[in-house]
Image (cartoon, rainbow, N blue to C red; front, side, top):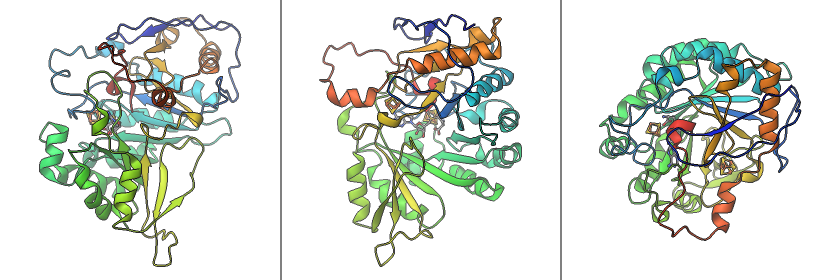
Length: 379
Ligand code: SAM
Ligand code: SF4
Ligand code: SF4
């Protein structure tokens, strides 16, 4: 029998809980939401802490020493995360991404990686296991992560200019250490390394071309992310968003590019390949991606569930509340109960915030809705 799920708000937010419909749901097999979107991708935040203070994510004036970070007892243990991940895989998830906060700050993260790598998808395959990191600890950890079974890694890097990068991470952390992390990941055998650059107009947009030049032909895919209005603390303004179409136009002035098709359903990035003299994609030069969450919403095939650091299930990056799976884990629920609960929650999903954002008039109330922070829910 499915347990009753009590949706709860993030403990730091004041949003009202929603009601989940009750009823039996499958505990194995693919599940679709109300818009027909299949659950395929699970992002797990393993910590709400970070050693950077990127202003677009964890601005220093909010995330200071008085910020109520989660106590250790609130965090899901590795066993709890693995148990939940197993239920998600039984419902058709194929890809698991560890994130945060800074995931490499979680002690013995490689142990979690090896536990997750031992799980199997519905069709008996090893899950596609990846991680997003700011790269600060990667040089030290890359080999252990690879040995534990991590398949891929995405490193965030917003500039090659040391002064700009130190300013953007707001902890005076140097570019060279992140580049050393990327190099270590490559040497350790992590495949398909990606680099994420959040573009903030007026802050690092002049770094777009140098970043592209640096990573072109290295086998590393650089992805330009539109600065998003996620969370409630980053003081987001539309005039600081550089639309991806402008990024592509700028790059095309330097390097010929050809558009590529999506490599998997629900892929967040639109792909462009560097072209040869004949105008065809030259695989040896590689590709770039643009993630246009603001100007080209991709909710239509969004297949991602997010598990917060304390075990709440979020159905959208912009959600105001999550569903408390931790209380099921720490209660009497069986694996089948938990899977059935997840299926039921996903089955009721209708979130499509980015699409609605462009349809709704701007909020001029002066009291914007409180949304969950990216560092808590995971990017
Ligand atoms: N700390 C790790 C990192 O920075 O890679 C993982 C967590 S971070 C929240 C995940 C991704 O979200 C990063 O690539 C980061 O650049 C991106 N991100 C954070 N805040 C953002 C925002 N306001 N707009 C767009 N991307 C953002
Ligand atoms: Fe930390 Fe990543 Fe957020 Fe930057 S984007 S503050 S590195 S969690
Ligand atoms: Fe998915 Fe929500 Fe982003 Fe749309 S806004 S793509 S539903 S996470």
